[in-house]
Image (cartoon, rainbow, N blue to C red; front, top):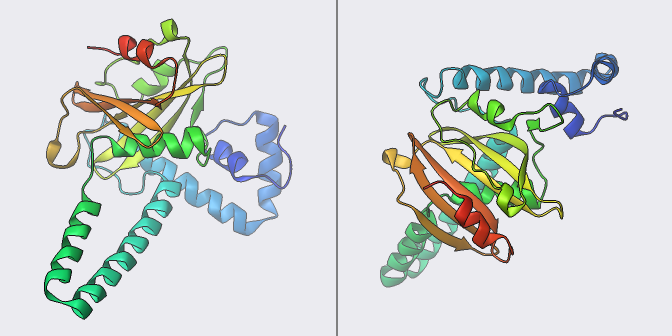
Length: 251
C-alpha cells in the first residue's frame, strides 16, 4: 500500500503500470487535487510512450533522444559542468598562453576520451550502489526477466545463467545512450551481493568490442559483443564470486 504524499518511486511505478489496482486508484485521486504533480506524471507518461515506440521495432527505428527523463536531466547537468570546465581551461590558456595553453588542450582531450562500457559502470553505480533510479521491472513469483528483455532487444544474446555463482535476476531498468536504448538487468545472491548484465547498441561509429576486462575504482567490467549489441557484466572488484561469474559468461 502506498503512502501519501507519494514519493518519486511511487510515481514512477504508476507511470510504468507497476501499482496494484487499489494503489492506482488512491494515487489517481491524489493527483486530481495536485495539478503540479499531475502535470509531471503526464510528462513522464509521454516520455514512456515515446520510449516504447522507439523500442517496439527492435531498435530498427531512429534512436529517441527522450528515452529516460532522469538520465536526460543528469546528462544536461553533466554537460553544463563540462562547459564550465572547458571555459575555465580556455581562460587559463589565454592567460598563460603558449605551452600552458597546449597543456590545457591535452587535458580536455584526455577528459573527453571514453573507455569501453563506461556507461555500464555508471549505471551500476547509479542503480545498484546509490539507488538513484527505480527499476522498470521486478521479478516476482510469476516474473520472467528474459521475456521482459526480449520485448525490447529481440536479437540480443540470452541472459547469462549465474545460478552456479548463486545469483538470480531480480530487476531490470531501461536506459538511454547516445546510440539508442540500453538495459541493465540486476542479479542478486542470498547475501544481497549485486552484479549486473548490461546490453546496449554498439558504441560511436558502430564500434563492436573484442572480449576484454577493465577496472574502474571499486568496480570491474567484463565486456564483449554479439548479435549486434555490446554487453558487460559489472561487479565489485572484491566480489568473492568474480571467478564463478567469469566462468558463467557466454563465449
